[in-house]
Image (cartoon, rainbow, N blue to C red; front, side, top):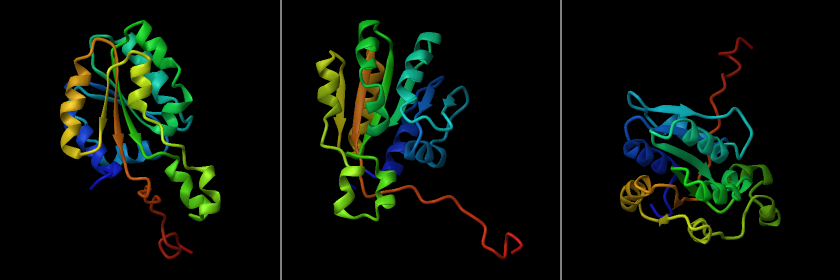
Length: 191
């Protein structure tokens, strides 16, 4: 599908992660898509927060500095990446090798149902279109924009070869939200 479904992006990332990769995952829907659709192989590691949106990118910078011999990948949404976008300059200045995969659905899609999907409230969750590919290039960072599933792996592979920070911006469907967690029925809960 175009734009990509976020579940598909998580599965594609899972297949493309190199051995020994450290995957840093932001909070929000990205954490849910990762939990459901990323399968780590032996030697790969996953770090994610229990809250604190925007944590992913600065944590990935720290991980890349701590273990420069391992591939470090940040998996974040556009909302999470916006929190610390300016640190892209820091990563570029110090040539910190990490790849950020940004799921760009132009908003905080997990907030959409809160506002009853009313156009009157779109400004509470929908962003103005931003090209993170262009933003990264303005910082001097190589970047790729992915709109088709078949373009993800080649872009991601090229980004991994960069000797500093790189961005892979993937356009994802704003209408797809994470299914709510299962809760027991009253009968199952003994009520």
